[in-house]
Length: 119
Image 1 (cartoon, rainbow, N blue to C red):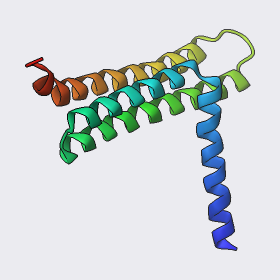
Image 2: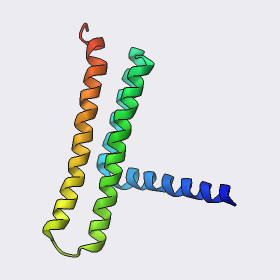
Image 3: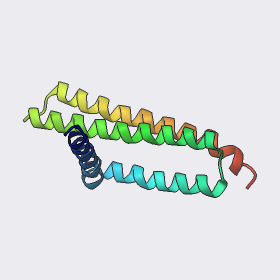
């Protein structure tokens, strides 16, 4: 019975990821970037340590985008008209995505620059 509950919760989580991919343009953009970054990482044969840095940066961006989607959805559910606090909640959530994305750019620079400088 516990295993069934665990599997159901996993399915709910996968549904959430699928929802974000289907409905959020920025999430799709992030996943295209992930494919490009991981392809470049494989092509350049980066170390396991650097690959781990990339995975942490990727995960942070994807999580931030999902939290942003959740916050925007809850705000939209509860606020029928423009409200300054609703705007703040949405802007701060979007800002979190921006911070995570800037972090991922910095990580990519640290990982890829030394390998690409000689090209």
